[in-house]
Length: 161
Image (tube, rainbow, N blue to C red; front, top):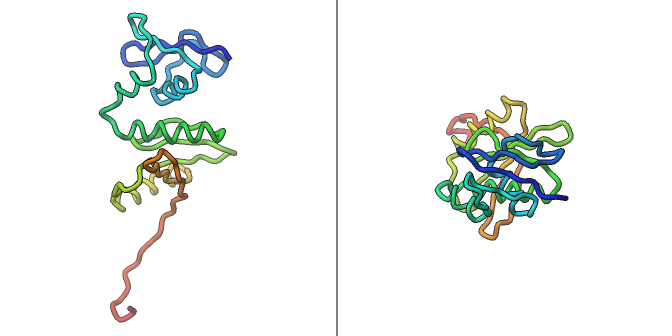
């Protein structure tokens, strides 16, 4: 496969020489551009004609820790033959497979996530008719996926304990 050519201008990645999957003029998400660079499927140029590498792209997003985690999960899904896109929040992805939509919450091991945040995120996934999945990236870059569900906790009388 011939590499596609992407121009980075005014904060956007625009396909200049594309393919069927990436038609000319398409605007790509930086995560997808990072994947294409990692797999040597694209060449990215800055507005002055300089080449932009994966390392350059990582530096552009170095202030957003979750960006690298999202890339790790996106790459893992691509290796498994799944195609995911950036989700609705800063730490989630969306995957469509076999007629089902999955909303993937990306986090790393040993990070405390408030239960209220997870419950709210799960509720939003259900409200969009999506299956909530939590992806945990470990210190080695391995990803483990957990299907999330909503549980209702009801108050019980002290005498029941």
